[in-house]
Length: 188
Image (cartoon, rainbow, N blue to C red; front, top):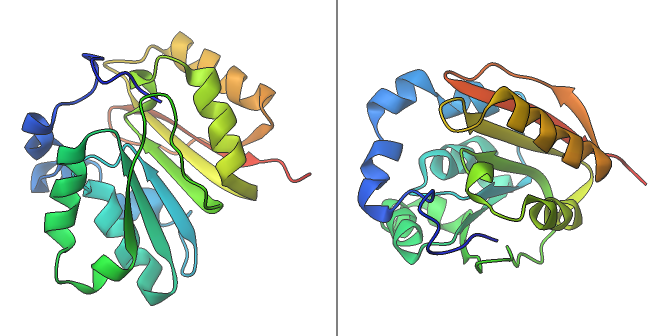
């Protein structure tokens, strides 16, 4: 999925910048995700990092859903593990280490969150094909990319790739300092 030596991947040493109260004021997971997450869902948090969204998604799902937290870096998954250790959330969050060129999740999911990570992936075509195979028909994909890394033109090109893979645009939510889109997998 991602090259380990890709210098665009946020290193574990900077995880604190991804998971703090200041960020929560600017990018509140509850506000961003509430329209798309409901109890009982299976959600994939792709590129979960230290679990900023993972933990909040698990809370939103209550006891009837689960989150698959996926990251390329063991250190990020360890941060999530430490955060949820000994809590009720531990039962709802499954940690999964992806490979460099493949997510490798076998479960079908209702919703995929890809927050600030698509730009880190060298082979987006392959990623989008795998996302299509993981997402249930009618499932939703929320992609949020940072304006400071991804140009408007690059974001539009990414959307064209996704629509050619069987995704329909259903929403363009506003997320602080970001370009974002929600797509739905067309039912066959």
